[in-house]
Length: 343
Image (cartoon, rainbow, N blue to C red):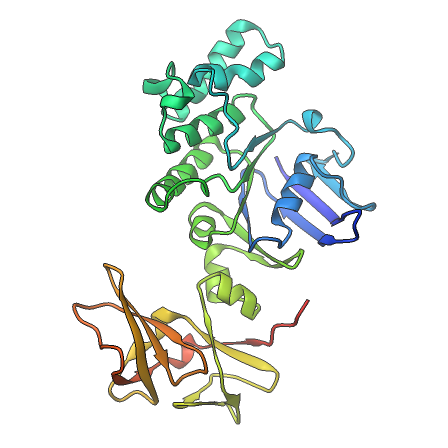
């Protein structure tokens, strides 16, 4: 289904403005991620869509042309997957998946058919009769997804579905989750603070900051064309270069860089992967720390800014702390953006 959000805002009784007026259009079958740091409003927006929070007056939530703004949670026909999964430990996998269907008082034969359908889709056949306590974290995540999908919801909402897993399993399961969501073909919205997770799973990403959407677009569009310094730092870990701009030249502590375009009131950022150790480079720097990360080294440099500038270095060796090096940055890799404004 399509989902249209209009003027969605939330002010709590204490006066805290958790969400500024927000408009969003989500297409049928689209996977949208709400990405941002803690406290940015993403979970509040998800809870309002679910009906677990009431928006400020003047809001509208429309499912396929039907205004559901004032409908209760059960009437909205949504599926939810929580961070904790909220599975029943005293039930088997099959029992957990069928629980919601029993609450709807569907015929026994229909319940059994739907349960088997999602068990197959989520590849849970070997575990169907096991207790939840006998499953791994990844298997539990699939059970939670299957339980949410069994009632055939109009939209699926996922709140940090992978954050309770360890890093290695989280990386494996984000790809599996992306595949499952596309096999279901359901409209889905999921909240995360993990950039890699959002970019791997979502068709579009809405980056949120200070209670509003800072920018929305495909993962590639956000990475290549961030609208603000905040988006550049959150999608791609861009780092600010501290210096002053004069006649399309950025003057740094360790040298100068030509800019493709620049003016006063702007900032210049660069991503670690775009920095190169280059004996002929225009910027002098000093190596502060070197960290080996398996596929590459992470090197902290001083000289290009007042704080450490991190770069990635792929190779079989790396400079040592205290070494003096020169670096270069391709002009097209520099991100020249408006200065961030404080809330």
